[in-house]
Length: 270
Image 1 (cartoon, rainbow, N blue to C red):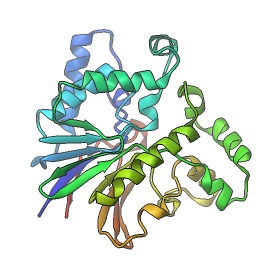
Image 2 (image 1 turned 60 degrees about the horizontal axis):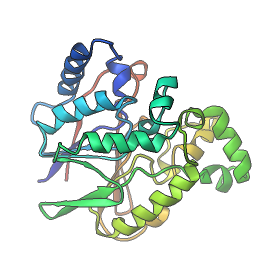
Image 3 (image 1 turned 90 degrees about the vertical axis):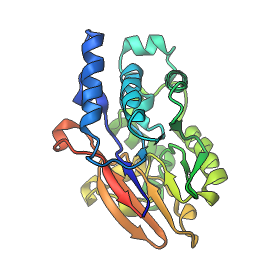
């Protein structure tokens, strides 16, 4: 039986707050990373986005995890693009893409860490791959009857993405990454995205349903075939292991400290 470990939405800097003492911060970060690992870890770890807001801290976390796991797969989530303050906006020249470029460059020496951007890796005959993906505002248009400008207004007034992601339009990024997913998904056995591909999986009650427009995308075309797949995602800070047709959807988020207790990576067997 094959297995992998998974956790999305680690939001590292909420659990290990930033500290001006770099030596202490590195030690605390790696101890926290160790605390997430189950007693008998799999060979593979999947992180479906939102590792943390600070690249150096993210690097320390990945450095430790990559010393335990043979393969670490991750995609970039919306928070991985955040520019949290004036210093970050200055450092990255008000362009969130520059933060992503730096993160990829920092981890080049970690040869078993894979940032998936329309790419895949074969392990023991199984293909793992994906890309972060973005929301497409389609829930508000298809289900609630709003036009795209009305949905965008709701998003801008309810999501920090509007203020903290700089340098590109999220809908443009959605189209770019949708093309990446189209290129790779046909060969994938395990799909990894940050956004979930259907609001049918939403945890939001009716009075919160507006969030579906910027927490999921309309990806039904990607899982309506007969191929057996596992689809790993995050973003909505939920716990899920559910089958729709031939696709098994899995989400296991750590989330923020005020949302629940500390937990370990989930081990998935298939």
